[in-house]
Each structure stands twice: as C-alpha cells, then as structure tokens.
Length: 107
Image 1 (cartoon, rainbow, N blue to C red):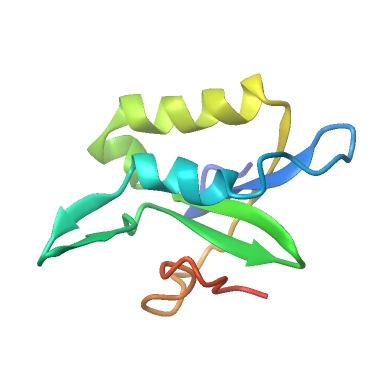
Image 2: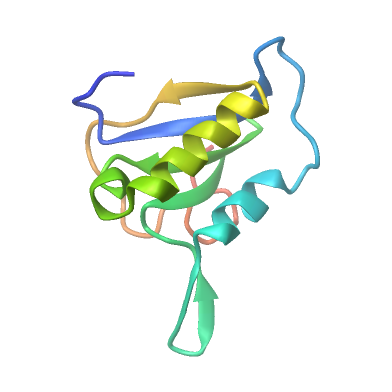
C-alpha cells in the first residue's frame, strides 16, 4: 500500500482466495467504528462497508491513523489475523455518502 493513498480496502477474500464468513462481517466490523448521533447509528466516514465486484469489503481512510491510531491498528490486525486481502483504495475522495449506507456503494 502506498503511503500516499487516501484509503485502503479490507476485502472479504482470504489470502487463499476463499470468501470470508460470516456474510455480514463487513457491516459488523464497520459497526464497531460507528457512532450514534442525530437519533441514529451511522458508519464512520473513516471506516465503512462497501460491496465491490460482489465482494464485501471495508474501506478504511488513512486519516483514521491520525485521529485514532489504536482503531487503525485494530483494523489492520483484523485483516492480518483473518488472512484477508488488503488493497490500496482510491487516492481521491469518494462521493459523499458512497458506500456508507450499508447498501453497497461501489459496485
């Protein structure tokens, strides 16, 4: 992963190419980083689930490291401990709200 990348993506595919289970793992992981406000629970702009090419994934924004290094480390350790593939994300910001509704965002 490039240090210039604005985000990385934890993919729901193991290093040996198998789908990661349970099927709602991405929502659960992003839910750990969620916040409650305005009368509802919402995904963090720094960590949210997407579906990309029919693969459940979690986008982690690089700024999370500056805001909460322990949370950033937790997410990287989750990927490592579960032998999940991690890829570089986008260098430019995503559209506001893309992928943050749990509905899939990127396809």
